[in-house]
Amino acid sequence: MLNELKFLLDSKTSKETEKFGNIYKLVSFIKKEKIFPGYEVFETAGTEPIVRCGGKDILMLSSNNYLGLSKHPKVIAGAMKQLELHGGGPGGSRFLCGNVEILEELDREVARVVGKEDAITFPTGYMANLAVFQVIMDPFMSGVPYSKGSGVIFSDENNHATIVDGCRLSTAKKEIFKHNDMADLEKRLKKYPVSKHKMIVTEGVFTLDGHFGKLKEIVALSKKYNCILMVDDAHGVGVIGSAGGGTPQELGVVDDVDILMGSFDKTIGCMGGYLAGNKKLIEYLRVAARPYMFSSAVPAVLGGGAIESFKVCASKEGSALRKKLMDNSKYLRDKLELVGFKILGDGSISVLPVIIGDENKSIVFSNRVLEEGVYIPCFRWPAVPKGQARARVTVMATHTNKQLDRVADAFEKVGKELEII
Ligand code: PMP
View 1: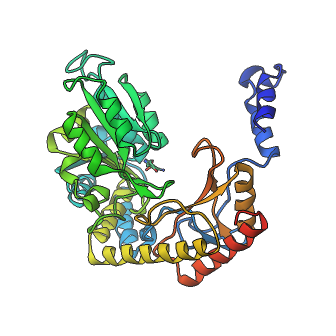
View 2: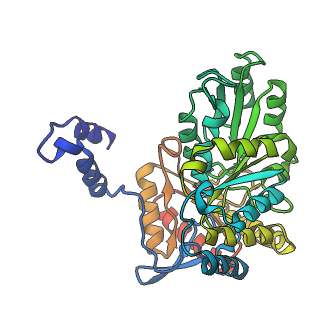
């Protein structure tokens, strides 16, 4: 298929391709080959265990609404109150007119739950990642305190695309270390003097691999080599840690992480993102982070919902939901492994990366299980290594055992049909 694609890209230009090159042809090709990413239209919220799709009830297995908080009554009430008070959008950035009280409360609530002095919030987690590397690694004002290109960012090879994009906005040199490989990271750190301006960035939870980032070991290296340490905990906040504080809380390294990034779009069940750290760092980010200054604030409606969601995460109810989630995850893992599926990870997180293997087979797998009433698009190269396409099964605390039985049955049936198991 890739050869065919090359031929397509090399083909001569026509009237249609004069302006946009082969873009249209590429899209037609992707559609013809049925490799267009799954793009189902849901008639009900895609965050719930059962969604209405094409007039049918379908089991949702790919929502990041891990604890089911998106539709929690307190979250809805918190959002509704702000919606009535402030309307749909903020009308500008925090500096212009968007700095309504509730957002100051949101910043404080995020900082409280993740265990940092302060936090700065953005309309998406993507924007937080776009903001951070440039301002930390590059000069704020003409070469002060660092000259351009003088820093180095050490980034795990499996880090999320939004980290990759954020790093691209910085002039710092990039060292990509092998996934969770401390020997490779240290080998790269050794190349630079201790005085060099350096930053290590990893994820707290690698959902496609099914395990945590090696935060304890990375903390030790960041201290030894005098590096700023940043953790993207988009998939950890709210769902990991004794009080939902995230992966650093679970692994006991909150004070050792300098910059903690997260998203409101997953466990928190709303939308938005944050960077948390000490007061001085956050003050600096408020005057230096471009997406914070030049784009509109988090809408109050989402801020109001997120605050309530954070409160639930940090409460007893949050602990009970986290337990239910892990019980559900183990229940499905055991069933799938019993019939022969290979599942990555060490059981420390709820997400189950189920190996399908071949890219094309993974597309057929998703389509077939959908016919069986289960929605689970697969991740394929380049998101994961070639030949290791996988279904990232995101169990939710709100799934019932009966629903998970149906998922296991559908996987077994289609898995046998396609000779995956
Ligand atoms: N980091 C990670 C690890 C993510 O998975 C995502 C979202 N998929 C983001 C950052 C971006 O967060 P958001 O969806 O809030 O933009």
